[in-house]
Length: 178
Image 1 (cartoon, rainbow, N blue to C red):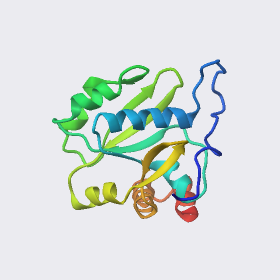
Image 2: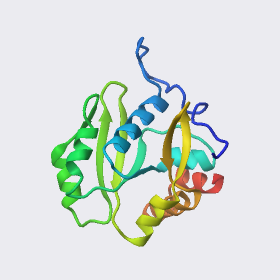
Image 3: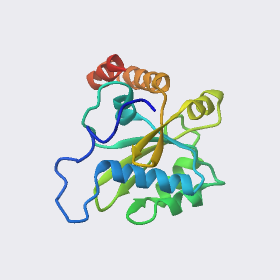
């Protein structure tokens, strides 16, 4: 355990329409992770949520995931993204078939309007090490999710900072906090 809890900074999203059965961001993340685990999909949480675990939590508009998808598990991923989640099948099949370095598919929780940006990972030693080094944290009582290691998220943030021509102040602040 990291000693850090997702309960505090991400417990209740602002701008969520209040409903009797509204889910918190943490509950939506836990639900998505549970579905991926049940489908046998390798994943880890990255982006600002992961950097918030190792550094300073901050507001985010989406939740970044790294997922290991190929033609052999695309149907399992599609099934995991059933209601209330939604994924574009054409976007998914295009991303899986692509040879591009940065392949991504979006998944939307249609009730809570939470977007998951799922970056498809390959089978390189670096990609495999990222998955092996991921850390399980308890997101809710008895529910664990895989989060990118501090080293991995730092490298990913640095890559995005470089791709953004070193002008991404949020990426830089995240790196300093880690």
